[in-house]
Image 1 (cartoon, one colour):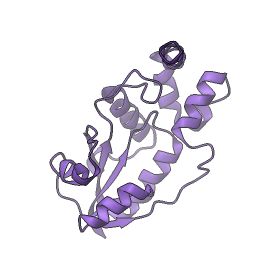
Image 2 (tube, rainbow, N blue to C red):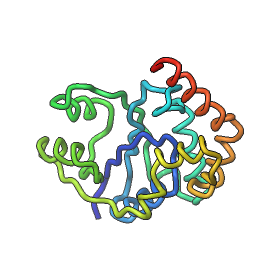
Image 3 (spheres, helix red, strand yellow):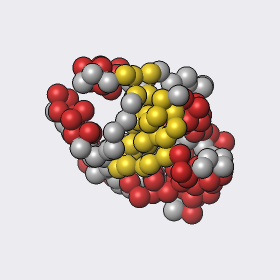
Length: 177
């Protein structure tokens, strides 16, 4: 078994597809570093939730799924806009790891170029388990809650997250008009 793996996501919001990926990865490694990317962004239509809210969503989902808190480390990491320095910047935020789990082509390329092993993560129903789709459903009033763990849906509702996303979209529309 590999010792420590790394998985990067924005988790806007954390959904059942993410949870499935985490469960798969935890079968491959002893410990997971879960990177909450774009940590400096919040309160915009693509990144509506704060880093703290996203970390809390992850912890709620893990607790609901009975994922042992000793199996992972959650690390917020801000974006680096220069791709050639992204991986070295990432390394400055996280402890050592053995493998990166990602399906995202640029992340895979940068990881390989840095000399690290990269593995695919099986995706389930990517057409619906996709944060962009979930945010669209929030805007349109479609059922989004079934796509996230119950604890995450409850938290988003407690934060009035759907209305926040609607307000942010309205704000973006006014700025772009």
